Image 1 (cartoon, one colour):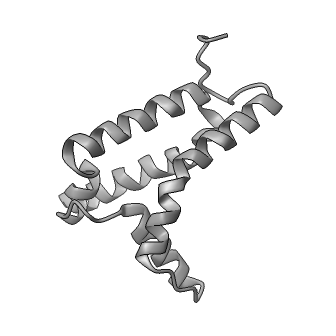
Image 2: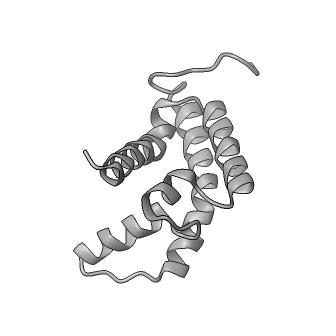
Length: 116
């Protein structure tokens, strides 16, 4: 398997896990993962996996994926608009996780029993 294919597969898997995390991962761990993600952005100036995949720090894997998916359905999105949407997505993860987990008494798989 080529390096770029391996990186793309790993990147896709991590993003699928991230997008579904409010339903299976404790909200405290989601916040911790987001903090680590932003520390990575702060230290390296971008996502390490995105750089490994595209050789550019200013690219966005999620943005490219959203634009690609939109095109399949005949929709056109600007990268600026997509990036603005993605800026708010982490807050949405936290709100969805808190709402889901408080209403349905916790995540499905990984629950952190601190701060209770």
